Image 1 (cartoon, rainbow over the protein chains, first blue to last red):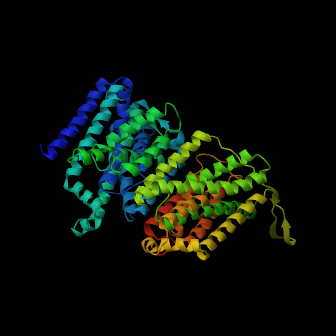
Image 2: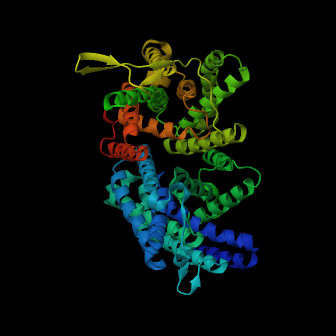
Image 3: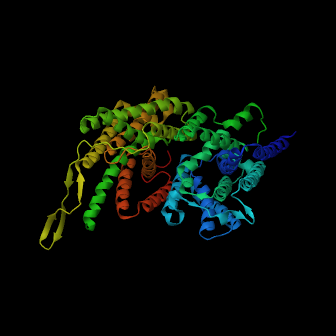
Length: 314
Length: 308
């Protein structure tokens, strides 16, 4: 089999496995699966920028939150139906990403991280400042009416799973496509050697900008989906911690691989789920994981597999 | 209270903030200047200083002054030691690579913070100040009877707050002397300018890095020990100092020490004054956004030299 065929087989295999798992697993774990897929969308959005373009953003929580509030506020306050509210969430995230990227991409390296961190902090404070509408840290519950698509009630386990599954599949296959395209290849080239890529006549700056916007939009999809499926919108999702999480997931699963984000989220989710049963300091696990990963496995789990077993891993 | 005395009160509070901030940000600035890495765990070293100060004062349990003086020595030394171990175990092994160091220090942030949560607990705990006399302040005004001095109600500070300002100034001057006048300072400056050449001339660069990382963390801890009688020790208290230190170091120009002090005064004072008169959230929004824009449009900072 050719590499492209192999990676296609892998992607459809992953999607099929998820579908089978939903019917096989006990309800608790099947329910977790929806959450894991939504968070994996977020991780995949982050991976496009961090794993493929080589830009370390510490502010992705603002895009996640933009999607979340874009959906939640229009659905709750303006009473919009699901589809336009969801679209608003994505547009908000993409627009915010465009503005932030246009400014932040004027810097590079450490400055880029700090600038994105600062913008995300500003976004977080803005959410708190407009507490009248956003209810600040406390957050608000999305009305039931905004969690119905026609006759389908998204609060039931099955509908929730399939909604998450469809969104995940679109983003998963879509991003795999993007990465195989000329655009995606150019992003990898920028990651490897920006100077040379520019010398070869590519507009590196514009490619990075587009990558940020796409990444922001995908993160926005995840944020809006989270609000829609789990019915809660809160400022915690805009905090620094939610900018660190995708970094952790992607590093753990394998930066710059298509399945890395899903693996990372899956592992981390169950690690935290397991450890929070006996301690409330579950973020300790995240901290230890980050340090160990930087020391011993900078390429993550999928990166290890790629290096040792399947060199074709996309 | 009228506007004048109110402003003076705000400025005094701002000066205390600025003094602590100058120490904390100086730690971050030295580490960045010499090692070219960003220490995201800096705020946690600050928190650790405050928590250890509480611990030392409680274990000794004698007169507050003795406990405080002991904490002033022990806490920064311990925190510096922990930081040096962290440097040896982690940072050295990722070869001080900028990106990987940031990720590793984010990990350290959570390790320190959550370990504190597990041992120290989620409560805020106070440390008693060694002395805390209330000092009423006079206000002067040209009135109907010419120049008059009176004592507005509420315009007062404490002897401890004045001590904090003085102590911070003394430490900063001492640090300046160490860096410019001693052999250790010379080694630091040599490493800062060109670590490879310094190594070629026999400077133990690895040890300098460890010491600098420890010194940076120790300065943050010292700031925290000074502040803990005013604020309480809490496991999440490292968040704001980290962001403010980032802001100060960026505004002052990454790695520029005089710039750091000036920026700390600027930010600390304006933070104190703005948060008295405006909503603190709005003040923070404006400050954070401005800093991001400074970094975008003037990456060398307001006082830094172009491109290091």
